[in-house]
Image 1 (cartoon, rainbow, N blue to C red):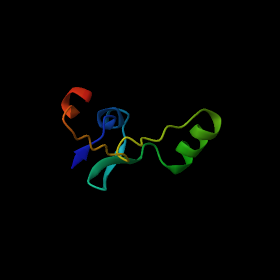
Image 2 (image 1 turned 60 degrees about the vertical axis):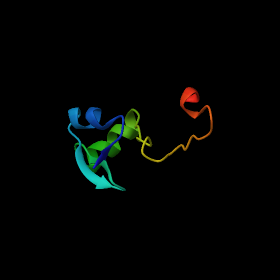
Image 3 (image 1 turned 90 degrees about the horizontal axis):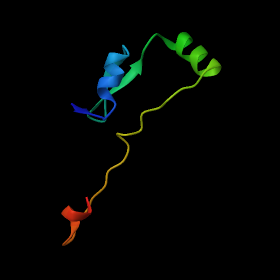
Image 4 (image 1 turned 180 degrees about the vertical axis):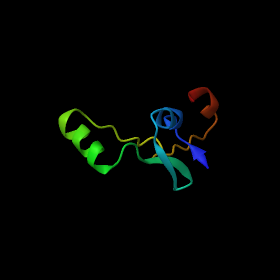
Length: 65
């Protein structure tokens, strides 16, 4: 299973992790009600780091990256 750059932070925060499109992704932390109330009263973050892919090619591809 692949891991996003935020994988360890999710685990440290107590996330229940599941496989989604070959990535370990958080599905919940404290439960739906607690998370809903937290987002309504504070803020929420959605990890989209698994949703993009870049293909870099060409003579100077390595230097560009």
